[in-house]
Image (tube, rainbow, N blue to C red; front, side, top):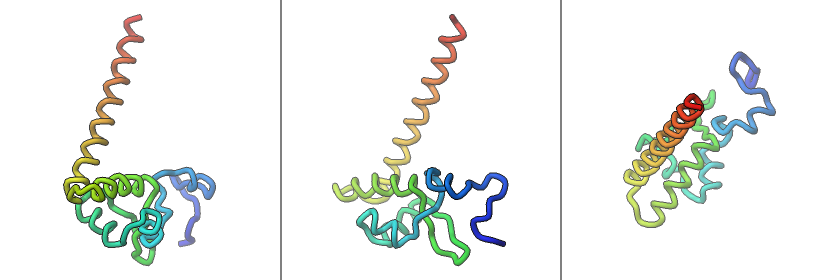
Length: 115
């Protein structure tokens, strides 16, 4: 198998830079960017907040989306919230946001069909 060879549903080289879910960052780089330890990132995986993809060599790889989640948890942990609680809060906040977006879309569809 040739690495980074585009296939069906595989982003091209340029698209990877814009894909928030592309696992572009190694664990070391991700920890450095967040100003935290690799153990912190592993604990987020253990808590079920993020599941990093694995490289062919088995190394964890993180996306920008996952790093944003980790940064939100880190802020809460820095303020004294337990890591499991912070992960749960971030998950619930995201679920609430999705539900609000869904409801807003339904309201918009209902109001446009009533016109």
